[in-house]
Length: 256
Image (cartoon, rainbow, N blue to C red):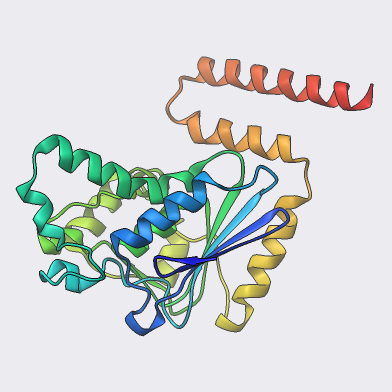
């Protein structure tokens, strides 16, 4: 299935999302985000791994700059036209944009970003929306929104601070500088750096490893880890007890 400049496919427990506008380095538009949200909402229950990648040499150069410069694209109005609307309408539209990213945090599956080349702005935030990031040596990240007078608003600020802390996140965003592969790995933005020719194979191997444990165990573990920093220690202990009770009940039921 292709929509909004994105290719989608589901093969048993693995779903694939491929940004497919290589002629503009997979630049994104609101149509991209709507297509992502619709795919996430319709994902079959049996999917346990979602792989997000970009066609061609770049993961994504971010928002299509023509929308920033005031040019409509395929019926999409320029981004700054949002500023003429009522606050409630602005919030509603941005929430719709964010829906294209936040579904990747769902505990029902593990999401992997396969990143090569540029991951800029919305591209960086799409990679951050995923649970894991496998990158190539030429991968480079930048949060360019502040350079345009805007803020990152597609859900990227939360995982960025979780991964590298407030101070580093602020410096990256406020300076809009490039973070290259070695620094991304050192800071924990990337799980592993592999040669470009090994990217697909590494992601395939990682997907297989994630599929090895029982689905319920991975689902419950991801949910525990997502909430760990938001709970007190005692609250997390309680959550672990509750999750384990559910697992034991399911396993006992499957045996009996």
